[in-house]
Length: 276
Image (cartoon, rainbow, N blue to C red; front, side, top):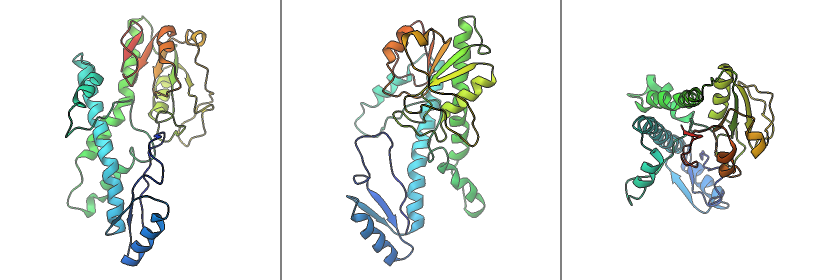
């Protein structure tokens, strides 16, 4: 019996009981037992014909998200080059009552599913007639977003006659998603590493991650610093990577020397604001 995980960390509108549960069995008896087990604690159980169908359901769900995030990230870059606010465009498109679901751009993909699951099928190339063409495109678009954001930081500092090398940069939010403490595959960590490699003095602030955790591939001996009107003045640039609700963006906008908003969503244009 197999039932893929479904959750949306930080979303208060759903809990384990209210999220429908897909369940497939190796045999009809396995499926029957699995459905009976989950029905005791889940409001709706969705049986499918096999464990393979259940696993493919998980892949399709995550590929759907990854493709649409990749699309909106690519559109963000195009819109930026054309002087168009992609968030204005998304808001307008979302008024269509059918055929459109809004997705929002960011500095890359994070979490333990979406950055990884879409590429499981790539390894099946030798055993299947075809492999989704989206795999290579997804890798190129979403993995390039940290470099795009860093280039925006470099350009913003350059306009102020500063370089990344030697600048003090505060990264706001290092969890992969707002209002959670999950660091898995967080693009914020890549941003920090790329800035550090270019000579920046990097600090971070995250109310959900007080100390930078031990990770297999990423190492920072840092603790979260407070975000106050006085502390913001010590940094040449503040980079909004994860938009936690606990951040006071009005205060940040009023006191930071320079803000590069990788979400491009919460800070209205001002002399010290750069949307990335």
